[in-house]
Image 1 (cartoon, rainbow, N blue to C red):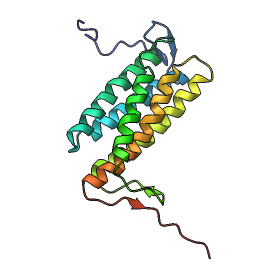
Image 2: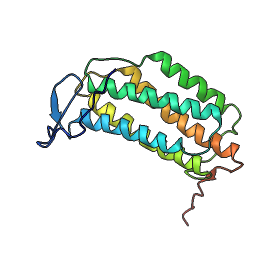
Image 3: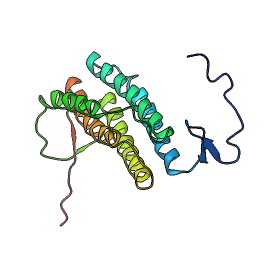
Length: 183
């Protein structure tokens, strides 16, 4: 593929619209653009997490996820186009099960915190949940790839478990919510 972006500014969005991959134009606040933007923000958040020292398998997993998120963004920018299938969802489930296997069962809610990597993971998890909501909202008015929705749902679960796993690897306890009993 040659240089596709030889000029970064085009001025075509100055009217409040933006172009999709199929050549159509929509408003910059269209639910499709909100979904695409949330996927991009999630990918950026994972990029921040990848700046932390991570076990090699976690780093490789997150890098793979970044590529799949780019695929999902591509799907959203070209209505009707599909790149993610249920094999990607199953792959996340396998990693999730592996990481969760050595963690103690949860008896309390946990707060984001512990190690810096775990905290970044929690941030990515919350952005992932919002991304899932934005894609679901788009799905009310447009056809979307159901496998991509499932992928985002499993990814948020994986990021939660990964945050706990990273705390354990760093020797940091999960930060347990201290519920105040009313008197």
